[in-house]
Image (tube, rainbow, N blue to C red; front, side, top):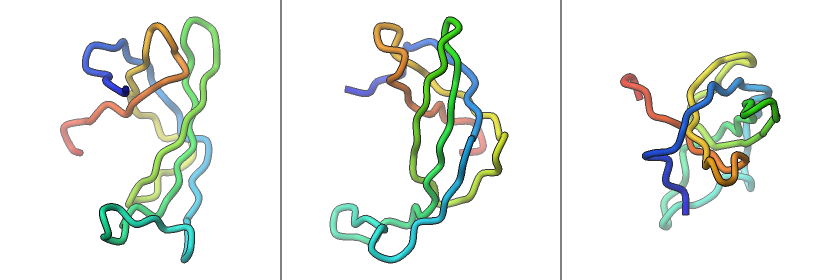
Length: 86
């Protein structure tokens, strides 16, 4: 279960941003999903590199930094930390 509320944070870096078209767009609860960009990112925890990805309605440039919270028992498990502008 993804929590993140009390997990430590790390800064993640966008490594790729790809636009998903047509059949790749998922339905969420029977409603077309407006999140068309697949964002890949990486982050470091205790000298170890971890990667992740998420869907976004907006494109993010390569190199963009944002915070993620990671599970200290399994640092490869992360969630995006909302920022005040989100």
